[in-house]
Length: 273
Image 1 (tube, helix red, strand yellow):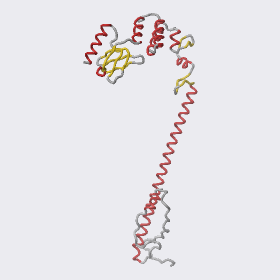
Image 2 (cartoon, one colour):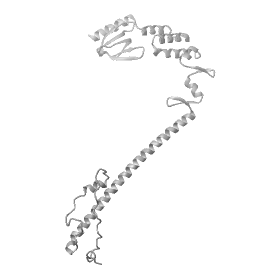
Image 3 (cartoon, helix red, strand yellow):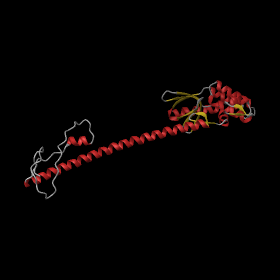
């Protein structure tokens, strides 16, 4: 039913010589007004600010009507092929006054193609007379030695200073990151060193305890302060201290181990020369 209604509207519009779509109502209730045309399975609506396209299946109804776009098209058709720059300047002025800004510059450019020195068109496009010819502000700035950098015009010397400051800032940031990584690596190496020292100390203590257990049968007395033949458990507190856990309380260290006699040396009781 919808396709039949659209087809009827198209036929009527074509017979009347006018555009077939001015107000398009969509399924979601939205209405779009402009100069519309059919392109395949799309309904293209040309508006003052731009062009939009909809699927025919999303179109509920089409209401013919006249808009400013119709008036603009009529005026554009009247001066089509004109060799007078003034015609395009006047059309550009009319488009600006009626909010059809998308057609302003293109008519001014058309006027300059016919008359490059047209003052009204040049000034409307933001151009100024410079060294005997019309030029844009960008062209004037470049001719004066300015460059566009970081969103503004500046001299080449100022640009070099800005670039230098950027490089210095990037270099400082890089050095700061490298220094941070170096400190973290130094802390990691120091922690590994403390862990290794802990294991070495634990292994030495275990070796001494084994030596006393083995040589006790030979008449050597037990080391004073140790618990006889008891095998020590893993020193968890010492390990946590070794890896740098600051919240672990300091535990008094064991008394220094005595010097181990060389293998095969005779036993000498304490105090005997």
